[in-house]
Amino acid sequence: MGKSWAFAIGINHYDNLQPLKYAQRDAEAMATWFQEEAKFERVFLFTENSPPIPANPPIPTQPTYAHLRRFFYMEFESPLLQPEDNLWFFFSGHGLRYQDKDYLMLLDSDPTDIESTAISVDFITQRLRRAGADNVLMFLDASRTYGSR
Image 1 (cartoon, helix red, strand yellow):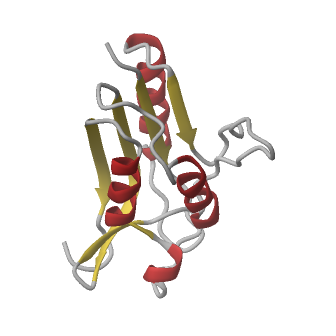
Image 2 (image 1 turned 90 degrees about the vertical axis):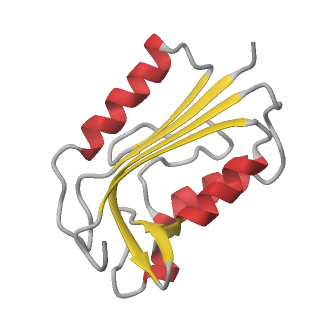
């Protein structure tokens, strides 16, 4: 049986968007489930007050545009898992559709500058595919109170 890794991102308070009530709680609950129930080897939690990921230098886990892009570029530039491995991705927060693309809105995302401050679902999907695992699951609980549905 292969390794299992997971990411859980939950954002309640945004710099430029209305706050949400339960996104961070949902991500924390998923991270706990991944660790304690599913016994995943690696679980990365990104919330407003989650601890940094040990690295040199440590990777901050507040879900900002710069932090998440840095993490995905550092971790997923080349395959790090095997085809028999599992990779799960959970996001709870605001989402937005802009110019026929879906975006995940981050703590510092600006709805007037989507392409430069939000992360596209396509970018996340491409990075997850590069990990090397054949079993990739993506859960998006993205509120779309802005823009089109």
